[in-house]
Length: 230
Image 1 (tube, helix red, strand yellow):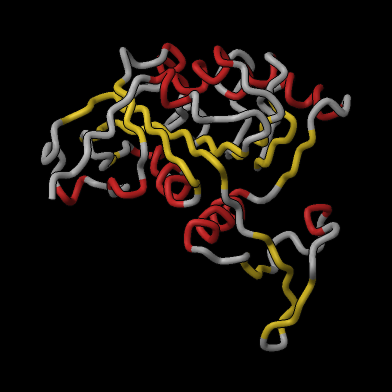
Image 2 (cartoon, rainbow, N blue to C red; image 1 turned 180 degrees about the horizontal axis):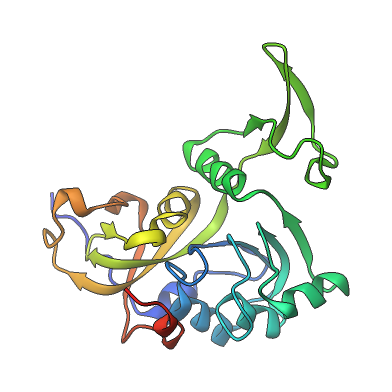
């Protein structure tokens, strides 16, 4: 059986995102954030989006472009303190923001990718993050239910890919990208380098190709990555 070539243009891949979609964005601050795909999403202008990302980036970077363009209705994240626009929009009621602890966000995404309905945890039980959440007892210990997270589309950034969609990440780009690639109905990966099939050693594959639908070769690394020294 011949494995398919999943390479695509950026515009064709992002065009699969519809108004009102839930979109996961990989990344941990700057590393692993799909800046080029985000810019194409801004260019196409889909609206009413629910964005799931570890952070809201900083002003003038990544998620901030979506906020400035009025495309985000809801943000599920761990913190927005580095982005004054996100804070102002939340306080003005222009976007809905759901916060959760960083490890819990990762675990909710992992649960979604594993097909689970949710997880039980005691993290943040006595804080505002627990408001409205179901509480249960497991083996005599109190816990609360955190629902799993899935998305219509995940946009992720890889350092290396092959044409089938096997992906390799650098450093902290591995925090959320591999999990999100398992938890979305459609996965679009931008890659700094796209290799022929077999170009990645098996041990260098962090996301296997069956999880990936589209591979987009970047014309060049986004200028937003210039602040990262590798």
